[in-house]
Image (cartoon, rainbow, N blue to C red):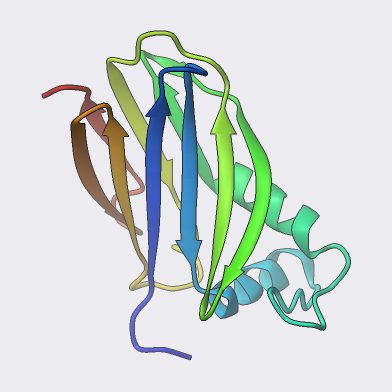
Length: 148
């Protein structure tokens, strides 16, 4: 266990593909607990003992608890995979295409139902513009206008 509960999510717009690329940095022990609560399976993420269903359980969990709405339309998110990093896991998503993003609402409930003090920090990048949000159990979503 650790003393603070935080995830960091970077959302970057790629004008070449007209998609948002999402990278989430989350503590694996917190994810293990959430996945155990939801599925009853000890996933043991990012260890040699990782359960064979861990990645599919993680995919379902993230896609249920994280979403992007752009210009009033919920974007479909594709889970690309995960990558361990010392004491964290990076999870990667890519959105469906959106030509001219102007307004975004981010919903991030990751880990908030299991850890009352969980904070999910969001940073959104579009060209030279960037802005952040801080979400938690009381505030699971926030909105941004690109360029403002």
